[in-house]
Structures are given as structure tokens and as C-alpha cells.
Image (cartoon, rainbow, N blue to C red):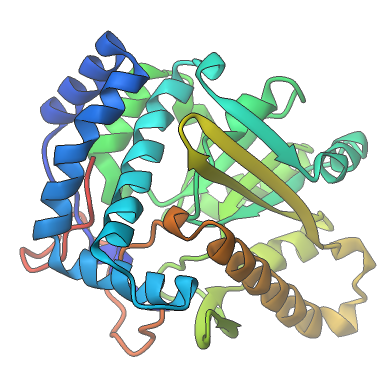
Length: 316
């Protein structure tokens, strides 16, 4: 996996984002989505590398050469999910219709009363879990890399002051200690398993017709603390509809010490397989706007002072 995502910098300004979000709450979600169309068209026309990455991914997921309309749907889905995040942060759950697949899997994990890892990806919305979490008394601390989305996070934190308490920032000395602490206290932790920081261990697995690299750290954490891993994705289906999926992909308690490395490889391959399945099911939900299969690019250091040549991802 390329570390190119660390180089992607935000476009726009905090003032501009606050203006857009404020206007969205003023006019409502339906009208706000109409406002996204010119923004999507602008980024589709002028974010060249992101457009190339979108085309490459969609050609794999769709099994054909994507049309301009496919690229536009991809950008618009990203913009809509990004907008919906702010409504969810304000607890506007009534705006959304959410179906849950694998509710029995989720309930069994909750009934055990232990901490659990929710392993997701930059596919659809992780924030939509909030809509289901209220009815299941489910609080999840999200592990994420915050430095390349500082403006979005600043606006989000201002809207929901409790949000920083539910975020574990990656790239810090105490990041993994916080994850361990949460799990040992039987809390739930969400991790996106499709990106890795510089220096993180990775393994290759087949993904959409070519080998890709995925981080091994979620499985090592689960093994260390004997916690299960549930695959989770919140797919955006259009309009106000989302579909949450839960599947158990790793049972750390059942793995003997001598079989740990083999178990990690098997779980990682299982994750990549389920990720591929849902990418084909809902291809416009893929929000990694860089070349995901480019493992030959040199790793970059996660710095706040990005170079001017760094490719911009779509920003909404």
C-alpha cells in the first residue's frame, strides 16, 4: 500500500467549511445536497490525480471502463457522506433510514460484555454507526489519523465538543496505549484497516484483481488482549438510506500462541475478501482517492507542512 494518502492535503479553509455546514443546517439536508453538485463538478474537473485514482478503482470494481457519470457518482457519494457526517454529529438521526445486516452478530458481541474491535475501511460512513449505536447502547472510540484532515476535524469538534473524547489519534507515542486501555476496560474501538502509517507492518492479500498491502496491527492488538474483531461497513445507498453490515472475522481467543502468525495472515486475507465484496456491491462508496495498489512509492513522513506538489483529495 502506498503512503500517498499521508501527502494529501485539504483544500479550502475553516471559514469556508463552516460557511457550507452552516448553510446546510439552515436550508436542510435535501437542499444542501443540491449545493454539492457544482462543488463535485469542480473537483472532478480539476483534481487530476484523484480523478485518475477514481477511474482506476472503478474499472476494477465495476469490471468495465467507467464513464464520466460513474466518476461523478463516485465524487457525489463522497460529498454526500461527508455532509451527512455533520448532521450525525448533531444527532439528527431522524433524517436517515438505516438498515442493519448482521444484527445478531453485533448483539452476541455486546452480550459478552467485553471490549471489541470494529474493523472498517474508507468505504461508506463509519459515522452512521452513531445512528445504530444509540439503540444498542454502543459507544465506540475511533482510531484515526487526524493530521491530514485538520480543518474538517476542527469544524466537527466545534459542533460536538464531546467528539475528541471518542477519538484516538494515530501517529502519537501513546496511541496504542490508549487503544489497549479502552479494550481492557471493555470498551469498543473502531479502526480503519485499509491504511497504514510509515513503519507499520503490512501483509499482502489479493484485492480486486491485484495484490495490495494491509496493516497487521489490528489483529496483533486483538491477539494481545484476546478480543474479537467484527468487520463493519456503513454503505450509502442513495437518498437518505444507509446499510450497516457486521460480520465476525477474527476470534482471538481461539488462536493458540504457536499459530498466531498464520492466524493473522488468514484474518487479513478474510478482511481483504470482505472488503472486495462490499466494494463490488457499492463501488461508489470507496473513498481512497489515491492509487491504492501502488506499493512501490517511497514512504513519506507524516508532516503538517505538506509540500506544494502534494496531490489534493476532493474536499467538501
